[in-house]
Image (cartoon, rainbow, N blue to C red; front, side, top):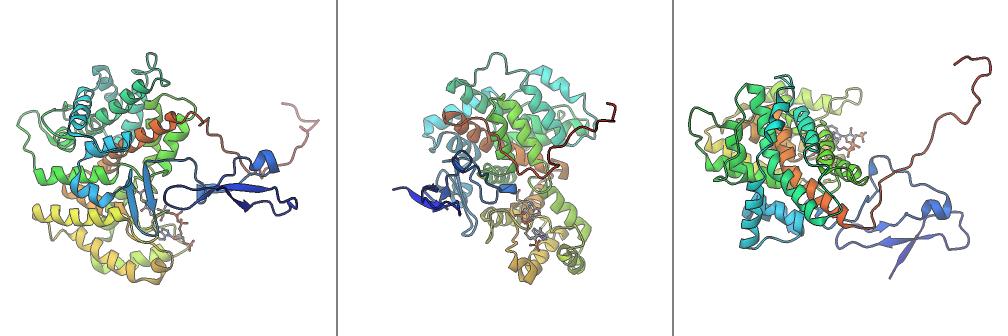
Length: 430
Ligand code: ACO
């Protein structure tokens, strides 16, 4: 049964109703597609606070209840019981793989995890101190030159191939952007490792000795990748979808997503959290930081706090906090001064009226930075790790968009507030 909402106040005919669409979970949505053609009105929603930009069956987020689920499976269960490649398969294809499907997927990823040797030469064009995310935007975008002319994105099989290529190559690209900055030679992927462990050997392995894998850290990396794999229509995913809606090359679309993810309000936040905690230095400086965050005259925000959707708690933050404690304990870093500052800062902020009123809770980035730092990942690489994880979500959303034959190019409108029409001054020479 279709329900209607009265969207046009002056419509006395009663025919101005707009249909209300029901999803399987979460809020209903008013279908405003005919608003302009029928009523000459646009919907104004800068920042998309009340806009469902698409229908999606991939990820569900309930910000008030603190729920995140991939294809219906709660994130806590996936983090505890699954592994990243299984989650990537689930996101892409909708179901957990059978043992045979999982092995086939792993083989496909292993087959595509190398970079074309010519791609490797691109790295040398960057300054050694270039930010890894800058390198990743460039290198992933450049891959479109390798997989363009012979690729037909209207062919579903080729789309799946492109998606697997992206998931497979991203750790290699990210690790190379780090080793390049250190002056070390690029490490090739090793197929005897699982996805997360392979990423770690490419980050930390040295050419002159065997890589010794720490299973606790490899599992923590796998968990970080699972937690960050998708998050419905966030800024970077929406960027990927918008770029893709024009039929653009998938590698170029993912490069656009990486660019969006880089910002400090999005994936760049975990880097900012560690910087902030280091600047605070010790618990006695926390009140000053809290006062700055609350001061409307100061642009400073408590990094790792607040979320556009989670207004209760971020379920990923709970998992990652427990992980951070475990890894710090395992590495003998339980007295890490930054962890002490983080715990105290969280405790003080959660009792403060300002944060309570605005429903500002620690988000996933508040503890992910501490965990990555404990694992020896340099601060500049934090967002690159996030990009490796989110590639699984981006390609799944890209596949979903292309599987929907009804979806045309995304083309928002605007509320124009500029000059009204006027004549070019007669006495002016161009
Ligand atoms: N510190 C202090 N005050 C904050 C913070 C914060 N971290 N976040 C929001 N507020 C305040 C705002 O000043 C505003 O106050 P006001 O109502 O008095 O004007 C109110 O809370 C609402 O803030 P908005 O900016 O409207 O919230 P929005 O949903 O747009 O922003 C965001 C969400 C960007 C995450 C914001 O909370 C923020 O900047 N946090 C810090 C950066 C961060 O941790 N980002 C990571 C997000 S998670 C991820 O990408 C994986």
